[in-house]
Amino acid sequence: MLYEFARPFLFALDAETAHDLTLASLRTAQALHLPVACAAPTGKPVRVMGLEFPNRIGLAAGLDKNGECIAGLAALGFGHIEVGTVTPRPQAGNPKPRLFRLPLRQAIINRMGFNNHGVDALVANVELSAYKGILGINIGKNFDTPIERAVDDYLACLRKVYAHAGYVTVNISSPNTQNLRQLQGESELDGLLGPLKREQESLAQQHGRYVPLALKIAPDLDEGQILVIADALRRHRVDAAIATNTTLSREGVEHLAYADEAGGLSGAPVFEKATHVLGALSHYLGNEIPLIGVGGVMDGRAARAKLEAGAQLVQLYTGLIYRGPALVKEAIEATQDF
Image (cartoon, rainbow, N blue to C red; front, side, top):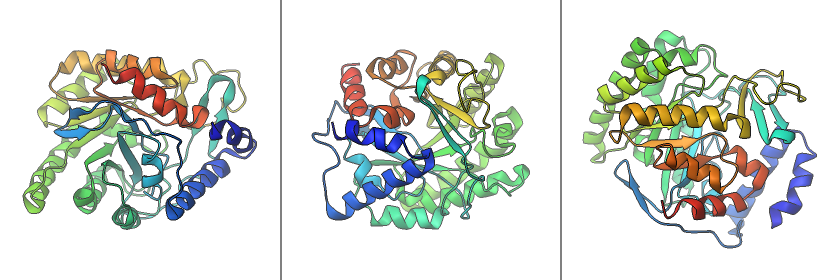
């Protein structure tokens, strides 16, 4: 209910200013132990990746890049929180403006460019958080690291976040870091996933705890590319896949203001593409590897559709911007009997 009053004010601001103000408000609420939701829903527990999730609905990476608002976001009722994307070194991201709303289609275009304070700052924030739930940490590469050495950045991040994560997501699908999506190719996947899985095994022995690895992929894939990714996931025994990130397509928003801005499109227009990739991946993998569905979840029906397409968990982000905390409750209720 409170969000219904706050949204017109937030939408009157520049999109990134509103984003920063929302995070600042959540940090204040955390510090003062103020409630951020009237009655956070609980849902029905589900076991995925060997982890016990209190419900199927999670927050996708991108909202809280630096892990500064984990407890406040968890109070909305999410079954898990994913923070990041984080890189080894701090970076400012792409020049502003870089975040644009398309309200007529409940969509957002962003070209943030992995802006974050660096992995050490994120780890420090996680250590200060009182959150005891399942925390996903999404890792990427710095913009100036050559794509041929991308694995070094992912390994550096994995080593630093491993002890603090419930699971770790390897983000190779952002359209806003040059050449990043090249890592979805067959040889590139082998060159990335092989070292990461070996490091995961080493870290599991070192810490006495196995932390699952998930791979986040793009919606802009054809059937052949999806099959290549499915085979790589199976070959390297990756623990989960997240389908999908934002799209480069402008289908459905072609004539709207900001539609020509560079960046990834999220929200309602990406639902069909993301769900198609999810369904195709589920077809190729069967029940071998858990899938997390994300992209265009704007209501409870869309959340349930992700499960029907083969997902075990669902994540949302843009829907939260347009609908507020009510969407979390609606999505949990729509999926708890699945």
